[in-house]
Image (cartoon, rainbow, N blue to C red; front, side):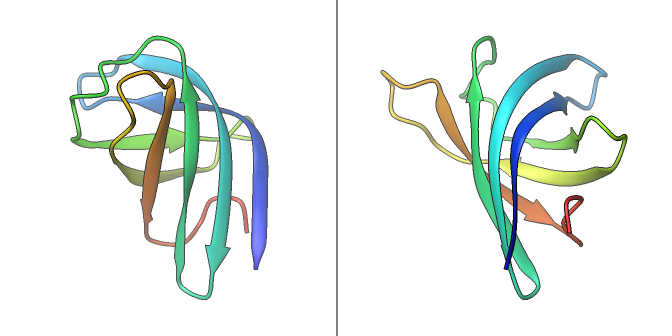
Length: 83
């Protein structure tokens, strides 16, 4: 199991970028985690690109969050960018 905690950027299909802090984990061929987000419409659950500070990228799907929370779940697609 590998893990990454730190800064990242979520990029929407229209190119908008949002800085986030992520806590990601991989288990075998799956990876997921959470992102702490200050400025993002959490109701937009479309796929996005996650970029780590070293430039590695992967596709993620945003999951739900509690209405009072700035933490949202992420589910990765493809190989984890932090392994």
